Image (cartoon, rainbow, N blue to C red; front, side):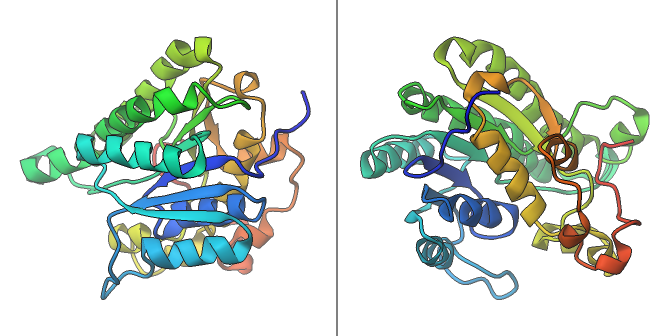
Length: 279
């Protein structure tokens, strides 16, 4: 493999970056001197959820990066286009797009409101299309080779993943299908497109909303996803593209052997809860 590409002065646009995995990726890249665009709807404090685009921007600067906080609804095509333009003008371009914003409802078709179905597909698969298309003109100009990273799972057509929450599964698989299609389409531009998914559940606010109170203790922290994303970003673009990657497997391939520090409760490091869509 060729020499790693430095993240210093590269511009990383992350949707849903006000908390959780998106925030952790922002801080990971910031520690290496990257410019971070924190794009999310959370520009005011939420009574039940920590973090806003502004608090993360402060953390990014403290970590050694440059920050631009943009209030963004990824469902709004005009907002997305304006945000990409603003980011590129502010930092002189865009090198990496992380489609991290997500919506989840683990409900079967019979009881899933159409409004919820639409929300998940708009924020998950449709936003990947809208954001990637809007970022493309800037990613084409990336001197190091552009990257698009989508947080979506490998395609697993087993009934057990389709039957209980088909609407959510469809929205996430749609992200992965777009990943594979765009990887082939954008290869001629030197742009890599990959999907990344956690092997275990990750302790985030979203997990609290869908799991029981014991699930966090059997999960890993978002740091493992940030470390895996970093490995993707420093890889020369066309050496790694069109892949549906798992965080743990990728890090093992890059030489990581100790995964205990990633566990929220180290005593449970050998009995973690596997994430959705993984057999």
